[in-house]
Image 1: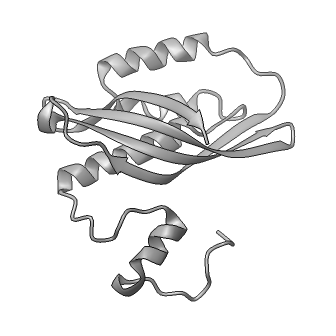
Image 2: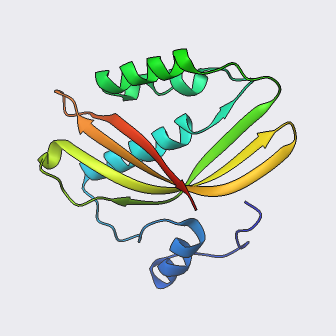
Amino acid sequence: DTNLPQGQVFDESNKEEFAALTGAQELGDNLSPADQAARDLAEFFVERFGTYSTDAGSSYIDDVMPFVTPAMRNWLQQFQAAAPARAGWFSIATAVAAITKAPASAGGGSQVQFSLVVNRTEDSGGKKNTYQQKAIVALRQDTSGEWKVNSLFWGEKL
């Protein structure tokens, strides 16, 4: 990214500056390995599913299928079947700007939810529109303990 400072070193002494530039949580999160795996999956899923181009077709859905619960797989298949064909070039790129873990819910450690703010850039025939949008992604552990995406809700544009 050309907006990032060149030659700058980020460490414990200036972690707030790093967080402000990247939208990252504090470096000292001390996330458990399970929480880190869940957060990584949430970020990957939102960025991959939220990035699309007419040239790539349904790859944005096909690529995330191994990472979802059966209920989410059914929803994705219905979403894919109902998607209208687009005329002309269209793309949307999605990148996570910030992510926070919701407090533990009644589901205990087998479920987790993240709130995200994403940067999105739409390109339709050369006309670009850039904005931020909220998203909520919920994950559930399968019987082997692996995290799977159970739902995604796109929220308001900011």
